[in-house]
Length: 316
Length: 265
Image 1: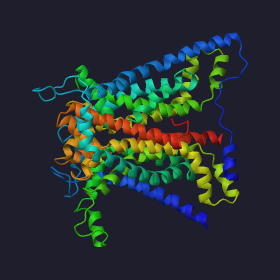
Image 2 (image 1 turned 90 degrees about the vertical axis):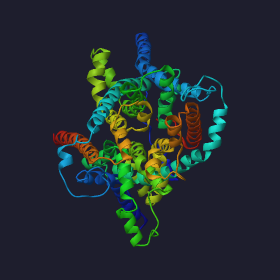
Image 3 (image 1 turned 60 degrees about the horizontal axis):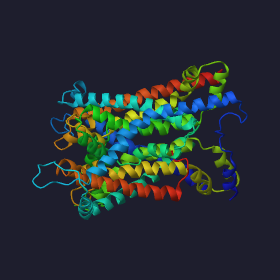
Image 4 (image 1 turned 45 degrees about the vertical axis):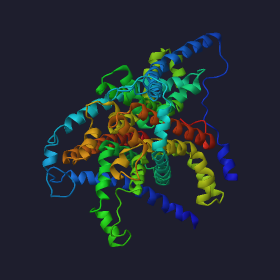
């Protein structure tokens, strides 16, 4: 309890600007600077408005398009065809649920792996600047190998005739006809693997700013290592954990590369694969748009509940 | 003692996590030396040929060129727009602050399929031709958010008094920005740019939706995966990894030396 209090009492960094006593000239300056602020954010926000907000409305509009009788493939007319949603949800709710299930397990696994990883670099190696820098780079550098190439590598490492399966079979950890690829297990492992950096980096960024003296204070007050972690380190790093879990869960729920490369076509299909094939193979733009829109709303709802429950203001 | 458990548990799990992260890269690297022929699935003997002739497989180098060009352009645009937003949001108060923060957060909270699909719906509706331009636009959207988030933290940790001091010394706002604020923000901007380039370079899903018939490196590999990825792709993947590692570690070593030199004084 006292440990928690010590953590609470650390003064927050003072972000206020300037002093409180200002002359009228300074006030005018302040207002000019205020207008300057709008000019700074305007171009970027125009870009996001044009290429993010507007497209989302385009998606919504497209999801309600109808196919006129006798139209060619890929020809649709603006309409209010709400049946698109009924049709898509009726057919693909299992894929939607499965995507969230897989993403949830992968996020939990990535947290279990990514937190110690971030803690190791940010806290244990705090005074080894060079080693810390190198390990940090090793988290980002895999992006340059291309994640599809790495996922394909996993596929071959875990393949039926590959080294891992034969070792597991030798020690009878896997039945003789057991396999690792083309299973839900492989897909979840792939998701965990691919989004691990998105978990580790925000947690690292948070732990890096953690005052180690707080941990030392916890130890001085005879809290066990675990108690100190539970009452001091973890609560203070919650913003990083929340950012990390969101940045892992969201892309994992929409991903389809892992399911396509490491899964099978029966019981590992994820919603992203369905959207992709609806768009490009079936050429059902309204259906694909409806599914995308449902996915977006579902994720936003989950994120909202999650941030409400655990969130802090300094999410970003 | 309970403490000792935590003492070795963190390095062990952390270390294993790095092994987990790097195993496939080691695999990619080893198989870049495979005398593979058409499919690079089983080991057929060591050769330097793939490294001597990395563009040997048709289209792999043009795909790589596209990826580099798209990544660099999207990163440049995102860094300029995103840094301005980050400074604006931290240093100025707006009536619609919450909305602005939401607008930055939303692209990160949107799965790639949705981002890709919505842009595709938009491009289809206005009849835009898909190609490099549409890929760059798509990448810039999510890169901006990453840049804003990264640079914002840096701006927030900056003492505004430094700029005020510059103003007191008769620096114009422009001079104060370029001589004081910008150099202090630079590490954050570089980190944001690197992250943004890395994510753009590695993106497949959004690219796949908005690329038309233009190939990027990840798209090339995905398409090739169905009939066997040529060993040259492994060469390029490994080479990019090594180059990125060398550049950043080189920078780290230089920074480390400078810190030591400053400390010695």
